[in-house]
Length: 121
View 1 (tube, rainbow, N blue to C red):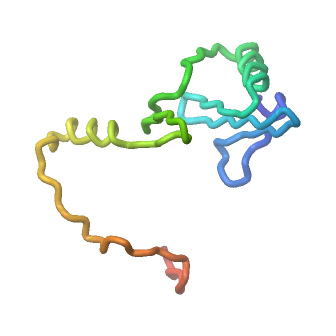
View 2: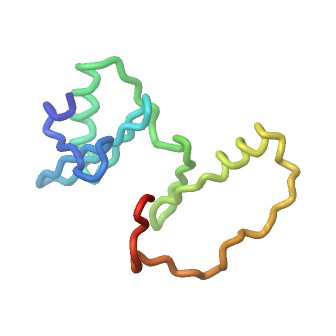
């Protein structure tokens, strides 16, 4: 349906759709039963929301705050955090009071794509 609006499907992720115009860009991401729309083109967002409301029963939840990951807006950009998810997971499993342990990975290791790929990953 969003293709009818003129959005194109991303080649790298089938849940991402985009549209570039001379007014700016629109990005639509489908996440389970939610849709996240972002842009640098306000009019395009309004047009897309009107189009979606004409096709489906939709509800605008406003600025994104939490969708499996916390979204915090700062002057320099946005910060994505899984803090709330981790606290919910620890609480749900009864491990909120557990003591942390060291990560078995050496700190500061630089991972690269060099080397021979596994024969059967």
